[in-house]
Length: 99
Image (cartoon, rainbow, N blue to C red; front, side, top):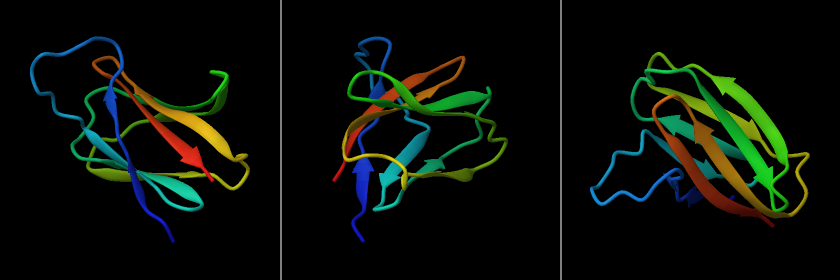
């Protein structure tokens, strides 16, 4: 089974200082494992968009403690996708490929 970390970056603006990314996303063969590194202060949304920017997955997330969130990929076609995390304070985006 292959494990690849999805590189998440700030989506909304360029930052000159180093910022803390509050989660890690790991692409497995059949799912993405999202690990929240600290308690989220605001409810958030996880989205996956295809190469045409269509939302193919969306879910609301509330993590009041350190938690792991699983996104199953069995019904996704091969191709390039974007993983987005959005809440009131941060917008993150990372790209990944399903082979």
